[in-house]
Length: 242
Image 1 (cartoon, rainbow, N blue to C red):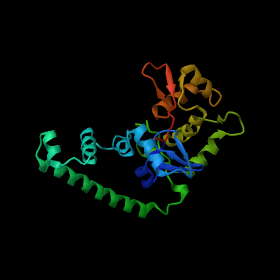
Image 2: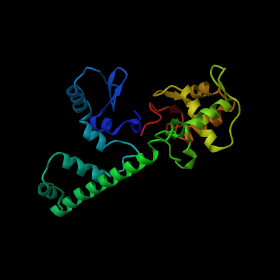
Image 3: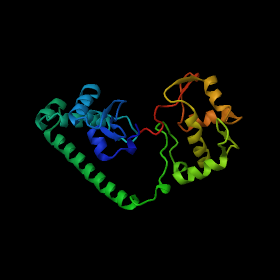
Image 4: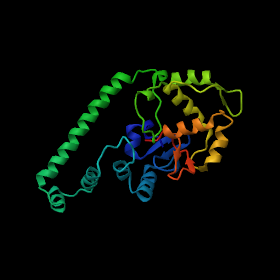
């Protein structure tokens, strides 16, 4: 699941709406539209240890909490008294109170930032929305500042969509255009499967003659994961995941 597409309410509840009802934020579980919230909460508690725990420990580049902060928030959520927690951690109770104050201040900052951001960008046309880089991307810089409208225009210029599979007409020179091209090529590779190098090549060869270059860029930009031994590749289940 791409957590950046979920609303604040979706994140706090642990599920989101789909065409047929509701879906879990953390697995493939779904519920019909007439299901009760209690059913979804039971699933989150039994399968995922509760939505709060999942959020606090979420593995995402957007979760900037340190392990110590995660442990503190987990303790605070349990309702433990400040003095008792201080004794467990062998620190002064004032230290615990300061940590709570720090968390509250960060929440206020986040609320104000969100209000500012939404007031500036809420009316932005869909064509001006930026694409999301893959979760594994490490080369995050202004090369990823690409609008969806730009993607649509570029793909028409570089691909022959009358072919099956699609054919890349030429390899682009600009890095932004390369990223755009890769966002389309990766959709030809199945998700969640471990594939050998020959199997990956079999998907890429019909698309472009220099499939080795394509494969290298897919890995470099995080669209494909390559095992340490270099023999197997995998397209993550959600290339837009956080």
